[in-house]
Image (cartoon, rainbow, N blue to C red; front, side, top):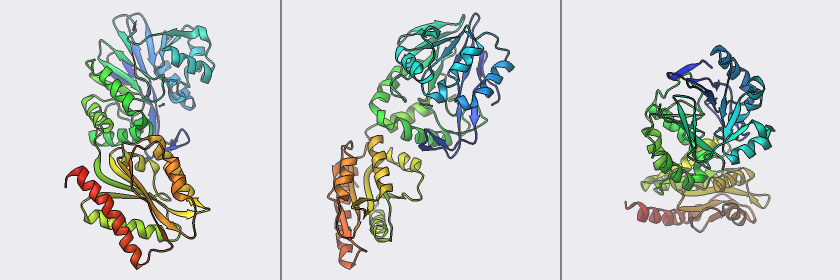
Length: 394
Ligand code: FEO
């Protein structure tokens, strides 16, 4: 990646990963990503804030050589996950005087994950500071964005918040700063949905903490730098709020068209009653899109055939994911078709036990819906429509 100047003496030296399409072997990356690393030069000391995925270490090291960094005093580790920490061991070999600056919990993780020796660390505390000469870092513990050890580093004089995963977005771009605010908020929402959503209460406290600082730039470790930090802080406040939207999500699988017939009838009824409805055929859906929709929606209805005595395995995966992401849903239910029996409802409700929702009595129909089943579908839909009308006053 090109070296780009954020402000005088602060350079972006990280790497754009244009081709990466899967993160943590789980999360789709339709637009690639970046591993941002920032070189901060003081009058006396030089520091690197976060590193890059070890697969891209050469590009970071080449950038440091091009900037003629002969002595690196500090490597600030905001987060131990390897996409930011993985190049630390190589840098410690190249720069034998360098120390890894981090909090005690992150230090423990780095020792476990990367086998960095204890004597290479400087431990800092929450609100601790580190001077480079004319430039001072303040460390702010911001746990659970994304792991329990995560912290943000504030460069006091330049008013830059290096937030690592917090406020990040997965996009490969050559632009250092946000160019298209709509696009970056979409990217950041997807990122929030996939990684941050289970930690809403922690994020609320972290936003309160960073709001005490005057911030000119938020420089995350994925995606572009925000030169208008308000846009992302405002978006996060909306996502973590308890407010939901008048929306129904229906992730579903249909093997022979029966569940599809139920789902499409529901889509028709909800739409005609003024509710936004989003069906996600799980055999074709990017789960990131489903996760994004879960940020705002009021209601989830899972659609599944009964197969091998329970829900379709793709539905089991989606239900597990929904449960793990802990969205702020208010209502949930299950619909689907069955041939002769099974434990579909029991299995799915057990998987989704984290959800604190009003659980509407499921609707399972034998085989392809018949004419009188249409009435059952409408009755089921009406229960949910009435609840939405009460919730949204329409
Ligand atoms: Fe970008 Fe949690 O690592």
